[in-house]
Image (tube, rainbow, N blue to C red):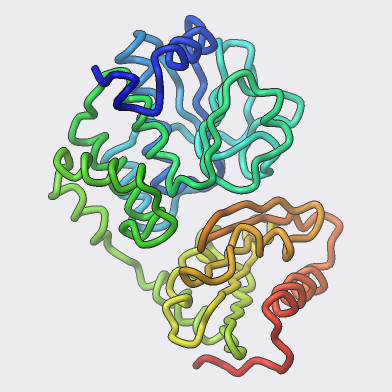
Length: 342
């Protein structure tokens, strides 16, 4: 057991969490189209509840998990997650727990009329509804939500098994780009501790996940759609077969030497998805996307990465896309036209 002097979480706060969770079962919900940080954080919190207090939980997500690495991770390390389209019968749970998302963020299946009992997240901005949540731990200065949940495990004296440690390590690694993006001292400490517990063979299976011809065709179209401005890149991907393609394209394009900021956007399932990436020590992506998003869209992020969604209902698609691009280029101070990247 780690003492309160050695750890930012004292036993009083841990006891308060226990009281708010209730007798179970608890519902753990993350954002739609969950990434490795979300998948790992949710499983880690479920482990805390079961190992510390013998409280059962159910893990649910909306959307899809299609990115090759994320899909392998889901099946290999975090198969406890269940997919849902509509969240119902919330009264059967003693607590609803949001992990890696917040009420009012617009990227999870929790009805706006329902207030969760617990929220654990690291995204900016902190939503107004957090003020009425009985127990919240939202820290935008932390690089990954899994780092926050790891603190709860440590405070309860729980050492993750190799599958959970590998999932947590990969979630932390991807959200911070191996500690190079928005990593705090707490992230670095968690990274090094988890490193000694992971299953390297399973980690390699995830990181070297196979890719289909469809994937390479989509990437080729994305590169051909990319326009390079003075210090910015914009890629309008049009219709996307999966919602996380915009994020994956943005991760690649920000590596371009000339790029200080990247906006990738595309449409999936009647929703416009946008992702922004910025260079380290440049524009804050979380603040930038708040200047770019248009109502009724929702967006969030921190440091060098951010994302958002805008429902297309009753909106003219081309006008919406053009307005978001215009706002982005205006914030970035771009005056002239863009040149094709390829």
